[in-house]
Image 1 (tube, rainbow, N blue to C red):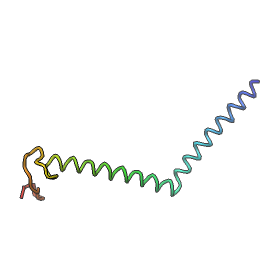
Image 2: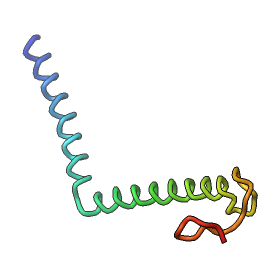
Image 3: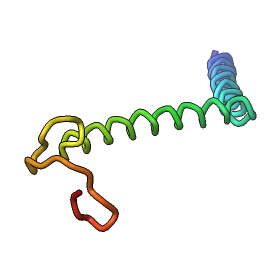
Image 4: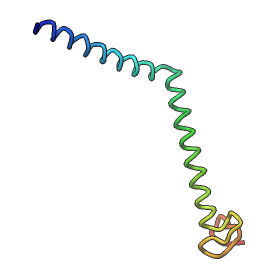
Length: 81
């Protein structure tokens, strides 16, 4: 009975490990890598757009006045036109 238990436990552990190895190997293929890179790029674009909206709102560049209460374009030297 003990041998049957350990054999079953070993078979179950082997199946779990084989499944994980297959999943990792699938993620390392060119298709898996491209999919991961595309997901990362989408997340970066989404976060960048969100932050840009926050900054535009903060500095009054979205048509509102912003916290500073001024509108206008900031030039490269930091002065307003």
